[in-house]
Length: 376
Ligand code: GDP
Ligand code: MN
Image (cartoon, rainbow, N blue to C red; front, side):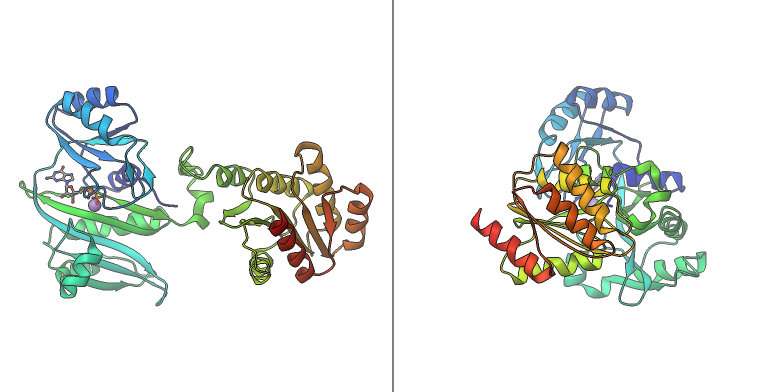
């Protein structure tokens, strides 16, 4: 999960990295009040989870509270690379003398972290790397050792950063470790006219596998994410929206992924990925169906379950239960195999819903679901 700039800023501050005074709002009127509190002159910054806001007109200096209100009104609702601006951050302007780039990223190729740093900050690092690769230092970081003061000094030296940045490099590593982040990036990290090192922008990507101990961020983005993904997450389902027309429900990520392949092999496109997990209950199944059927793009649904810990009769019961609360408006093809499959199939036979069909093999089920989606 990516954090917003204002959330990254909060984390940096908690770990002792200097950041500008700032507040967030979704209201232009309140923007004026905040500007007044911050001393009048402020930088108004769009809060969207994408970079290049400055270039897109999402970062603007306002000279006084009235201008802050006007600028906030302009920026709120703006579209930046497909992201609608819902909130702005108002920040005390910083007197910038030099801009640097620093980040730590997980390098999956080597199974280590990489410090990337440059004395050419402010611009997009990809651009700097393309034009002047020698201006971007890449220093591996062993996660077992981390960024000690000595290592930080090496990073600063390699990138041509001033020695005052060493302390920030160490603290930024602590942000990554303690907050369970996969990426932390500061662009620009600046040196002010008075010689202080301040993080002017921040990007943090948290490791979703650690969400259970980073509860303060919740599911992250209430009201700003795909509504179906939010509904699924609220029910503890592993759901990803795709852009096809066959809804796919399975148990276990491996089975769901191969089901997506088989559906694609039948010439159809999966509408989603929904893994009800091992040991799924009737309730989970009912929740999963509810989520999928509320997607208007879905033309047919394929339920592919191989019962292990999950019993097929529980899955069948879940489907039957779901019929009480969700109106089945599109055909459902069910393939149950493994633990208690016979009992599961019998339950669905008994229910005899006209839109539910059963198949005995994964290929057969996928073919049928694809045909039904095509005919719809
Ligand atoms: P981005 O375009 O999404 O990366 O947004 P940034 O937060 O990095 O802002 C874009 C640029 O605006 C920065 O690279 C800075 O050069 C400039 N900027 C932002 N805040 C200030 C500030 O307080 N003072 C000065 N002088 N420049 C700022
Ligand atoms: Mn930036």
